[in-house]
Image (tube, rainbow over all chains, first blue to last red; front, side, top):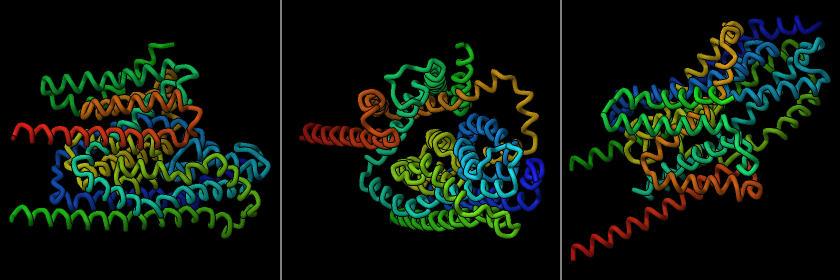
Amino acid sequence: MNLNETMKLANSLPVWICCLTLVFLVFFQAWKFWSLGMKYKNEFSISSSDIKTSMRSGIISTLGPALSIFAVGLGLMVQIGAPLTLSRLSVIGNAMYESFSAQFAASAMGTTLGAENFTFVVFTCCVFVMNLGGMAMLMLPLIFVRPISYATQRTTKQGGMLGRVIGISAALASFGYTSLNYFSGSKYTLLGGINAKYTVAVLVGAGGMLFFSLLAKKKNITWMREWSLAFSILSGAIATMLIS
Amino acid sequence: MENKVDNTTYENAAKAYYKSVHFWGQFTLVLGIVFSSIGAIYLGFIKGYFPGWTPIITAFLSIFGVMGHVFLDLPSLITNNILMGPAAQYMASLSGNVANMRLPSALSAKASVDCGPAGGPKEHVIASIGVIASTIVNTGFLVIMVIAGTFIIKILPENVQAMLNYILPALFGAIFIQFALMDWKASLVALGISVLMLTAFASIIPTSYHAFLTVVVCILINVLWTSIKIKKEAAADKNTES
């Protein structure tokens, strides 16, 4: 029994079927929440242009990160087979974490990913460990999202006008912190030096947004307001190519 | 009178909406746990390749060492709930990539539409639409990857691949500005706290609490500031009246 045969098992039909259930679940959940939102759209006064605009924003902000996962996923696919990669990366898909866990599982069996003695049993160990991690990840939200969200709703309702301030502050703080943290190359401190490329990406992205939003508002150009996010992140990313 | 009727239908719809969201949210997460075990059960117990519990537990404990703080990360759960509401959060929990895809997509959706009262159902539905779009794109990409991945990476030039790493930082900067344009004073407070957190407090506070504490402190200061301002305005109004 060797690596080739294991990869054949890893890409076999039954493994595909087991793994695809999770992918379908993700789509089912998205469909369910979509229809719940649509069911009450009149009561919540959500117009069809609201829906179109928010969909477009959601898609634009996902394109870049989704492409980078693509690259990590390819590496993983070669080592643990396509179906397991697809299911693990669509559910709680942290590509880094999944690579770790596959690696740990293989080393607990005294081998490594891609080694000649990566047997059926080692592969099965990977499946167990990766999915146990996935289950562990779901426990906390399963139990706590309901109580937390009723609690925050009560607070924002009591706050009245302050509710808006709470929402904006939370967004500003979380994105401001992450943006500034990028200056250091995500090292959680700015005292250890600045990473030029990441800093340029953040600043040009932010500057682009400021420019496009203000211009769109001043000249009243609707399409520019809708595409300002895409324009700014592209300028931010492309600007990094100018720095060597 | 008419207004009152409208209000009660809105309240009832909101109540019904959240009730269904929590039901389906918890139901799909339970299904996620059940489905996660199918592959393991098939390979381990039906095909008989079970490796024994010792290596599984050993490997799981090593993972727990690295990722345990994520498994037990209640602070982020609270922050994310304020940021995107329950429906988007259930989806984000199942499909993952919260910080790099779901939060940006939920927030940019929120920023692009007039969401009505903060923390209200319209805002939460809009956030969930952003996350639905993001989930479908992400999963679609993964399907393409599985089908044509190796080929696509081959035809992408190397500097384009390197550029992809910088899309996310640019995205965070841009979304920050979108919210800053709604309340630029609050954005200065947020930046000030973030700078303090990343310099003076960087080594004192554990990194996993940085973002959460920044959010909490920023909310407290801005809420305090706004309520003082409201009181002052009310006082000024009284003065001009009398």
